[in-house]
Length: 115
Length: 110
Image 1 (cartoon, each protein chain N blue to C red):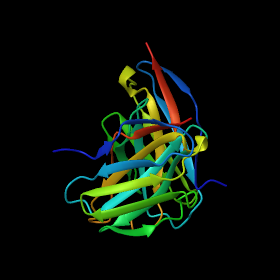
Image 2 (cartoon, rainbow over the protein chains, first blue to last red; image 1 turned 30 degrees about the horizontal axis):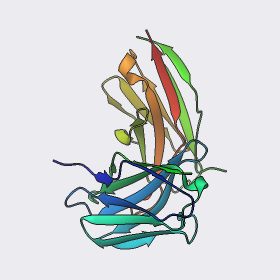
Image 3 (cartoon, rainbow over the protein chains, first blue to last red; image 1 turned 90 degrees about the vertical axis):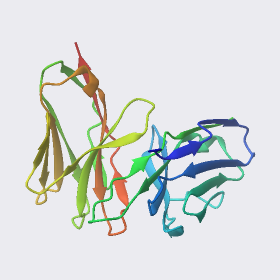
Image 4 (spheres, each protein chain N blue to C red; image 1 turned 180 degrees about the vertical axis):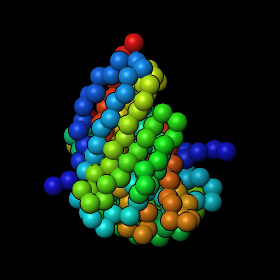
């Protein structure tokens, strides 16, 4: 079975440009999470969805960040305009709620560098 | 104060030795607990859940102390392949939201 798929795997862009990260969760999973990981701050939850509906976006750093989940098999995280401090690895994860146990399966991540 | 705190390490461990480390969490209402493993430049993966009575999975033993709000992980007979960062993870709500610690780095040496 395919795991969580993210694209692109690497992105290098210049400050001020728009960046769009994409995620395809594991088929059948009803939760989708976006995380950001840096050396300084570790793994931070940005936003998560349940059945395509955003549940908690309190981790989104500012209005430059937005996320959508138009259907159960696709989500995007957009940064506009991007800044050098946005450089990080962005992970998407999905899980299936059941029996109170929610193992999250992570994608390979998108390594973003903003120059 | 961070919700989940870990000693960043690194813990340098000779092959075959035992290593143990803890993490503490601040939310007494936390519901579930896990250890995830993250290899260098890879994604985190679930290592094991942590049950109230303690549990083992092969060479790995996890313990939970709710009164003192800490979780521990012990690795016996360390292998070179155990070198990784171990993330302490706490589930804080019924939706499945997880709080990750910053990780403890373990380096197993020949």
